[in-house]
Image 1 (cartoon, rainbow, N blue to C red):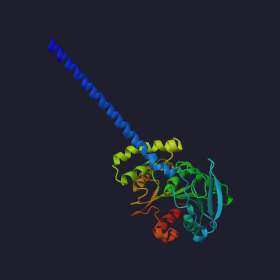
Image 2 (cartoon, rainbow, N blue to C red):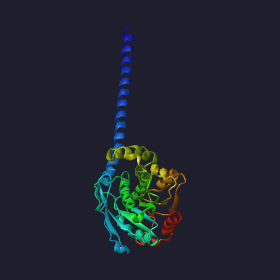
Image 3 (cartoon, helix red, strand yellow):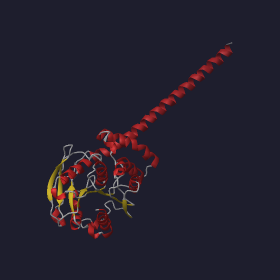
Image 4 (cartoon, rainbow, N blue to C red):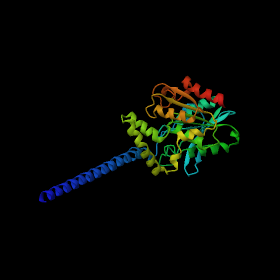
Length: 323
């Protein structure tokens, strides 16, 4: 009996010990899981906070430097931002192009050379300094989720001008401006055409694509995407996250669109272009340049884009054939 009792007590102690070890391992696993999740959740605010909570003090360039006359005008968005803009008029215009620049630079006034090229080919231009850039109001960059309201203010201005009655409106944007241009044509039926340069397919995509380009394994970057979206929802409102280029480009409904990208883009990887092209389902024309050319136009030609014949030819041919 004593031996049996001793054996029984030993068995009970062993079972209890196994349960204790299992419980400890479970707690450790839960703690590690929480730490990992917290780590993933912490990355977007750490990376993005200083990037979006900023007013971009871009350097304004005078139109005279580019040989054009421009009238300064002010627009007001439906959510209350006043935006400085410039109108460059063509004689007897056949359309008007709205220009949008990137997330932190340059000022949209850097596109006065493009506006001259447009004027010389029969198109007026409206260059909009988006919210939180230069002299435009705002202290937060919305990563393309609300900047389409800046474009909308421009379209409303254009539609109110008798000289532009019934003329096509084309939106032209670069980088985040390219993404905003896509979001704009998706959200604004009065826009007739799109030229988008080096746009990201979504903010989550370009955030994680750049993580991969820095050496992070793709599957870990993919896990990061919902945490980026969560942070964007907290910053901008969860309704805003539905507006992204990869969704909005599906709303072209036959309106002409030209997507431009470079294969080695180090700021917005080429994979964004591939996603946008696929999402458009054959509704877009494309221009691809080999190498790392985020602005597509060669640097030495940017002030006079017509001197980059391949780049200018793609844009002007698109406009001539479509409008």
